[in-house]
Image 1 (cartoon, rainbow, N blue to C red):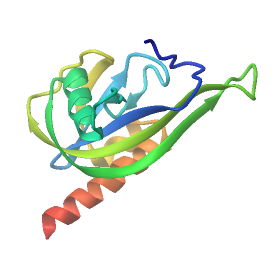
Image 2 (cartoon, helix red, strand yellow; image 1 turned 60 degrees about the vertical axis):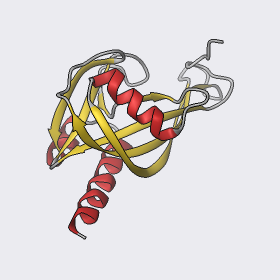
Image 3 (cartoon, rainbow, N blue to C red; image 1 turned 90 degrees about the horizontal axis):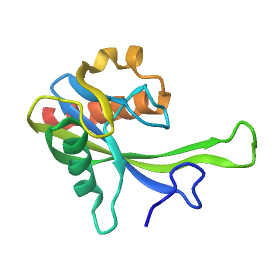
Image 4 (spheres, rainbow, N blue to C red; image 1 turned 45 degrees about the horizontal axis):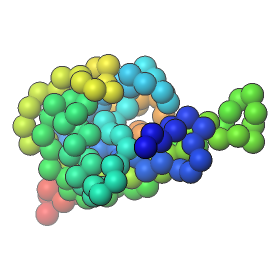
Length: 151
């Protein structure tokens, strides 16, 4: 069964993964819409029968070849974009479950839905990422990760 991503009949569950390695976060340049060409978190749709954490591990591996260890849920974000030509019609609707994860192994190599992948200093994220929600989620995960490490 093929699920329509553009102009869907229902919201789609997406998983975004904040992969942290010291003071760096793993970002990918999106190869497909929505937000094609923009830097973002690795992630994608959750598969039927797959847990949120299983989806997070799979998506990071597929898009960047990196291995990660999930740490917890950061937040849930709604991405809803309406069609410019028909304002009442929803073009994209994702319920994004953002997961914090620690780097385990590997170096980023773009694969699957990613056009590029790189470690970016958390302090430089705002200069590279355009969507404010992604910047907020990265900051929230980073602060929680380092607060937990300090205890």
